[in-house]
Image 1 (cartoon, rainbow, N blue to C red):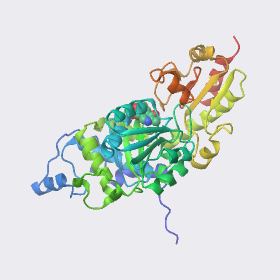
Image 2 (cartoon, helix red, strand yellow):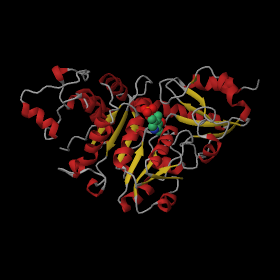
Image 3 (cartoon, rainbow, N blue to C red):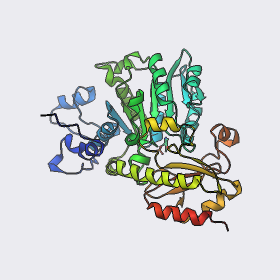
Image 4 (cartoon, rainbow, N blue to C red):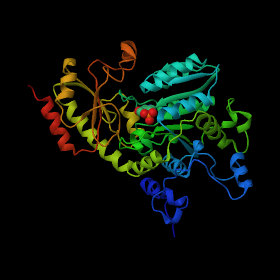
Length: 415
Ligand SMILES: *Cc1c(COP(=O)(O)O)cnc(C)c1O
């Protein structure tokens, strides 16, 4: 007799709630709206306060049974040690920066990060945390940026909108060698396409608003501890949280300082919507990745298109990295018309893609990049990120690929 194989991705995600114990046999996790949680004996309340109880709730700013169920679902996806959910992806990212770094520390960041993350880095610099931005497609550039006070390296699996793929394992090896906390924003790829622990990430960030929630109807964020980073070597853990197994220290500090004190708590209602969306993550990622690849291939051979950026195209600069690490290329696809003056008219001629910001909705979304999401950054920063004036970003949805191709065909037909 061979041992049964462990349940695979979607099997784990749709059953994770019940493994934690189902209330009244509920097939779906109930929505808990209570802010206060009472206990039969005051000793039980004390145990929750002192962190000696396994689980247990006291005040909803630190979590409810509904947010805890979503946390365990995210942990199952990343196969990590534990997770904390936040009101938005940005709340999770800022909690990581503001509670695990302090004045005098140095942070190395990808030069291709999400625009609002980039904006938040300016705030860190004002708080006395030095920031170096580097081209993370080359691990030697990260190595060259390291200083004695470097504490953390932060990057994104698939950058938006340029789709750059970092030297994920090269940087992982570097972080391990220097005892640095390696933080991977896995929002675009999602834990279905890429498991950040496989390249040595200590923390994984996911904006639940995007791939995991997937329906454009709720904001949320998550930070997962993979269990790979040795927190006993991190100088910024407060004495109060240096208790018990060091594996739990990082999440303890993030929950108390990042969630409880800063207060960007995910509501139970939003957690429920995100958990429901999460159940179909693998199905949606397979569908949207297949459509995005077909569209990328079609656009690449079209005479009116100058350039297509998609990790699963052999022409992509980091195609080998993408093939090695990613199960598929995701819904994110950028391209440039040969005539930059066609950028806006082309967006207007398309009938199916919705002219809107946002990512990973069920519908295809389209946006001209330089005029909108990277307007505030200015031309110099756009150039450093490889963003041209005519660049168009697509977040490919769940429509039938034949309909999408037909729409692009009419929009690109010579007038
Ligand atoms: C959208 C996004 C975020 C921020 O997430 P919100 O939930 O919108 O706050 C962070 N990182 C990446 C890569 C994103 O695309």
